[in-house]
Amino acid sequence: MDPQISLSVALCLIPAACCGIVEGLATGKAVEAVARQPEASGKITSMLMMGLALTEASSIYGFVIALIMLFS
Image 1 (tube, rainbow, N blue to C red):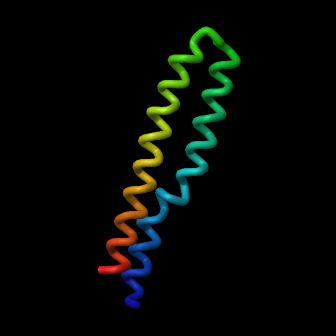
Image 2 (image 1 turned 60 degrees about the vertical axis):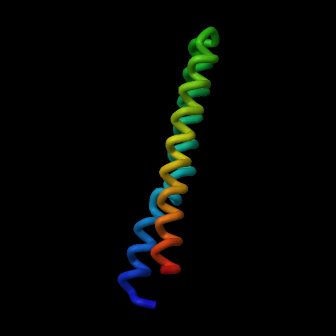
């Protein structure tokens, strides 16, 4: 395998690797926000889900691009 392809695939997988860290930080901040303002938990939860969905989408896009580069 060409070393440039291997490096490119590794760079495409950086979002997939960082996804867990970002989601953990976001969830922690959401828990802190609900602890401070329990009456706003519905709004905080909906915003958290939107942010987690965008984070997961970034991770999945990086993974799919890596697979395309690896097998094409």
